[in-house]
Amino acid sequence: MEFLEIIVLVVSFVVLLILGVPIAFSIGIAALLTMLVSIAPEAAFTTLAQRMATGLDSFALLAIPFFILAGQLMNRGGIATRLIDFAKGLVGTLPGGLAYVNIVACMLFGAISGSAVAAASAIGGIMNPRMVKEGYSRPFSAAVNITSATTGMIIPPSNILIVYSLASGGVSIAALFVAGYVPGFLLGLSLMLVGGFIAYKNKYPVSDRTPLKEVFKKFMDALPSLFLLIVVIGGIIAGIFTATEASAIAVLYTVVLSMLIYREVKINDLPDILIHTVITTAIVMLLIGTSMGMSWVMSFENIPQGVSEALLSISDNKIVVLIIINLILLFVGIFMDMTPAVLIFTPIFLPVVTALGVDPVHFGIIMVLNLCIGLCTPPVGAVLFVGCGVAGISISKVLKPLVPMFLAMVAALLLITYIPELSLWLPRVFGL
Image 1 (cartoon, helix red, strand yellow):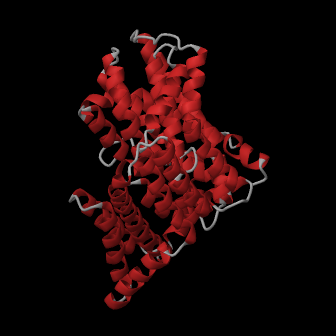
Image 2: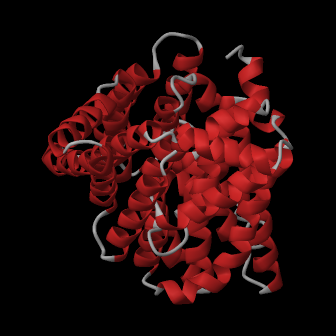
Image 3: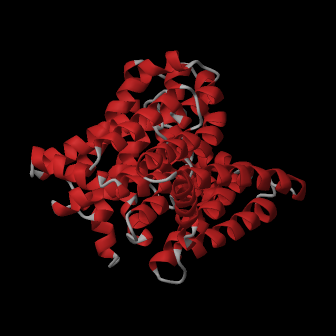
C-alpha cells in the first residue's frame, strides 16, 4: 500500500468537495489524479474510462432506471394519498397519531417506490400541512418525515441493495430484498416509539376513531398499490423472474395502476415523467461509473488489503470491528451519497467482516441502514434538504427534533448489527 497515492486520493477528494464540485466529478477526478501518480497519463485516462464503462456494463443495473421510472409514476399517480388514508385508518387514533401515519405511509410508499427522496417529497407534501393544521410543530413534522422516508431504502425493492449486490461481487439480490423486511419494520417501529413519546409528552392531538367499515374501504382503495409488493417480491422469490425483470414488471404495473385504475396520470404527463427519470438515472449512473473507477484505483493500490490488515491488527473481535466499521460509515455518510459510499467501501470492509464470520447479506443490510442515517444529516443529506424544502422550514430549526429520531435509528442499527437473525431469518425461511 503506497501512502503517497492514499494521500493524493483523500486530499484531492476532500478539497474538491470543499470547493463545491459535484460528488461524481470529485470521485472521478480524485481517482484520475491518484492514477497519474503511478502510471503514465495516457494509460491513466484510458484505464479510468475503461473501468467506468465496465462498471456500468451489468445486467443487474438495468433494474435501477426501471425502478426509478416506477417511482416517478407512483409519485404522480395518487398512490401517496391512498396510502396515507389507509395508514390514518390503522394508526391515526393512537397518541401522536399523525406522526404514526407519516411513518407508516413513508414505509409503504418507500417500499413501493424504492426511493427515500420520493417518499419524503410525496408523503411530506401531504402530511406536513395536515400535521401543522392539527397542532403539531412544523420542525417535529419535518423531522418525522425526513427520518421515516429512509425506511424505503431497506424495505424492498431497493435500488441501493442492487448496487450493494454489484459491489459485493454477486450477493443474491433476492436474498438482500427479503432480508430487508424485518430491519425495515424494526427501523419504522423505533421511529414510531420515539415519535409517539414526543407526541405524548407535548400533548399533540389524537384523531377521532375511524369506523371499521371506513378502514376497510381505505384498505381496498390502497390494495392495488400494495399488491405491487407481492407481484415484485413474490415473483423474485418464486423464481418467476429476476430482479431486473421484476423492475420492468413494476413499470408495467404502475402504468396500468396510475393511468387506467387511479387515472391520476395522463398521456400528456408521460414526457415530463420520462425526462425526470432520465435525469435521475443519469446522475445515479455517473455516480456508479466514477465510483467503480475509484474502487478499482483503491484495489490497484492495495488499499482494501491495507485497511483489512489495519482493522484486524486492532482487534479480531467481531463486536469491536463492527463498531469501528459502523463509526466509519456513519462519518462517511455525512459527506458522501449512499451509492458511491456503497461502491467504494464494500470492497474495503466486506473481506474484513467475512473473515470474522459475518454473512455478506447481513453486512449489506448493516451498511445500507447505516448510510440511511447520512441521508438525514448535513451537508449532503438529500432527504434532509427535500424534507425541509417540502415543510418550508430551515435546516437549523429541524436539527433539534431530529436528534432523538437519529438516536432511534442508531439504536435500530445496533440491534440489526448484533442480532444477525433479524436480517437472515427470512432469507433462510425462503431458502435464499
